[in-house]
Image 1 (cartoon, rainbow, N blue to C red):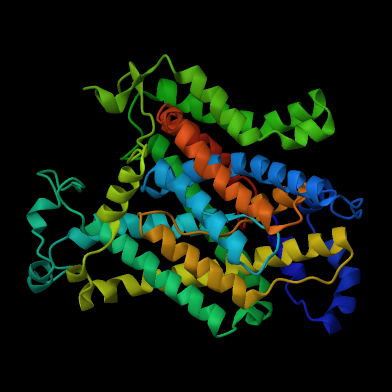
Image 2 (image 1 turned 30 degrees about the horizontal axis):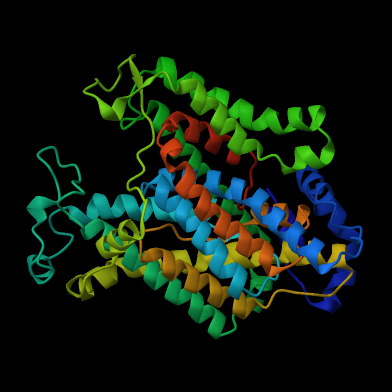
Length: 455
């Protein structure tokens, strides 16, 4: 949604700024202007004491964490890796990049473009990778894996007896993280200003169309959600409508400062989930796929209640040395390069928006240290790969939100990451109650505006 805002600021050299100033306002869409104006970033904030500033930054992190946890769960479900690791990734990436990144005030995490690529290589790892002929018999033997244990009689992937797809995805993420970090070390960040606008526009439109296609497939496709359309369709479209109208209703009913701090998407998801609590979960019983007695709810993929659970999760996801074969690396490399390039675009275009907002609010000339930011993103993506998480980048809406809430220190992004992980421990049992149709409805809203860059 903020793509044009970022693109018009991409040529950040000082000698180009005056030439572009007159045309910038015409290039901004009405939606971009509304989001930027709503941040209240232009007026310089009144001086605060250190204690007041710390409290303000903690509250900014808390507010942003609600949006991060909702999006993390949604992206985790969409990718096929699970809601729990999506939430955990949202917290870990936000924490690492806030502490080490080159942008002082930001919130990173799984984003829509990164999740789109993740969805593709997760599907590849569970289908094409396991097909006869993709890997040689020697490769299977060297990995000490039996291809017969990876699929059932119907040809579907069996995760209980075949760790290879998870290993492959984590190798992709580790290689992608390495490429991101190398971009930071090699100082290729300034090259972002040379990417043509039309290339980025077409690329992001393509990503949005892919997400729409996948979500429509959940409703009417061959592998659609379990349960009757009698439940799935109304829940999906009611969620979309609620996500769209609820923030506007809150602004009408509540004081402005209170309304701005209310996470509309999260509240909409909670309302629809509570409405569906009386319905049975299709995954917990022997129901026909089109049963009118149930609705498909979220499978967490794992639960965490102690450090032992974390240890087991990491131990199950770290690829063993025997899996790092030349064939696996050759197949993983193209996906890793896609992740690296996409994180580069996603992060640095977002940082241009954040820099502009900070400069307007603080009357400063502060800019992101692009190399440091890319290196931190690479480190964060490598870290989440260790527990089978989702790759991420600097996220526009979350970063704008944390600025809008008064974030001025790295503490704000750090607090957002910590709060997400605390909330995950508290609400993980609630996440299991969320119907798949609710996430589908939320995604329809996320990608309603084309071209879209990031969430």
